[in-house]
Length: 329
Length: 189
Image 1: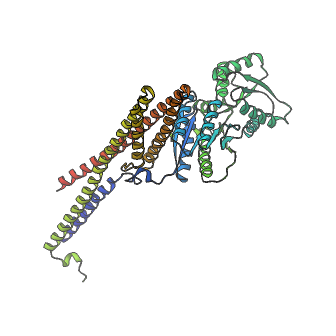
Image 2: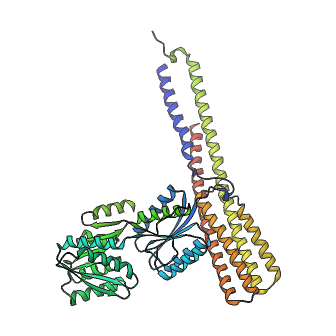
Image 3: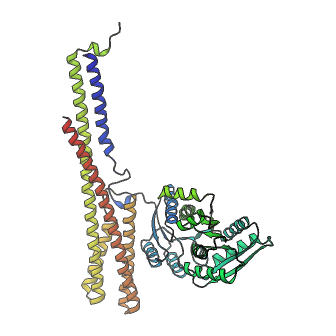
């Protein structure tokens, strides 16, 4: 009887403990909630980041970088993301930021003239602006976090030497809208291959760069210049245009060093159609942009131009990139 | 021979002790549950209160805008005094807002709206000056800016309202879970 009572008491105690733990588990209301005057809440720096671009994954990583830096540095970042074609919405978000008198703005430069005007407007209202991806050095932005285009081109040149064993005629592209950036990348590329006697380049200009425009250009290269056996594509549009034309014309033996990491580009790398693609590191760009802005707002000095890393995706590591992306999706 | 504690205490006392412990623990459990439910009820109420405060701001912004439009379109002096009065009152209210259970996100979103309202005031002042100078192009540009800023503020208020509704949904789910526990306890009794 005593043993029976003892067991019963144990079971009852365990049951009661389980029951007691339930209400505690139910208290899952955000712990940072506060009651009172909203204006008295410990105010961190309010930053707006406005970004327009085609890759969702790029935006995801950029936001991760922004959020990590914001939580470490006690800042609050509102992230507006748009597609490349939504320049109007991009400008409206910048206007909202200026109207809301934020402490700082981080933006990329989908259209130079428009963004230039907004940077001027923000400057006149004492709102510092950091540009990412592209620089507007003649504007009043306080800094820019960009990929070193020359080093980017040089890396592409080294990859081309590796892929072609130092024997190639490579097509290079320049476009009017992204002219200076691509020109610097091309210069880096040419400098990387200059000591290789059997490596040549052919330059092509594109009036209004788009995937279709690059498809047409690549087709005309295949017909009119059969010596060209490799391509250095300095942006996503040229990469996709050239590769789609290669597939259509069955020229998959050409070597392509491309740019970007859209799903389509990664699939082409996996299938061996693109030899390698150079990808800017959006996480570091996001992180450093917030870091620099906070340093500036705290009265520190920051460099006018900060270089971010470049990631090289080849057939060797494309599976890792795809797996990592799948995890994050 | 060592005697176990259970064997020293008589059976009757052991049973009474056991029941007493169970009753105390269940009482404690009910107390905690009651406190949590009360807290959650208040949070649901607060979320709706916040919602109402924001709804009020939405209409007051509209009123400020109507007064400004009235002055600029009809040149009625009663509108201008109404504009200044409504504007100052709303700005004062925004500066002393007692929103309940706010987190950092909602506080920052609200701060955006408050600063936008200040920008609205500056732009409205510019529009009034241009109107007095009879400078039509300046007036048109400042006036359209006020309308744009008003739309930004209203968008911001919608965003905050949705934020509070989502919070309220979480609290309601929480309350529902607590009710399930309460039902279990009643069945247990």
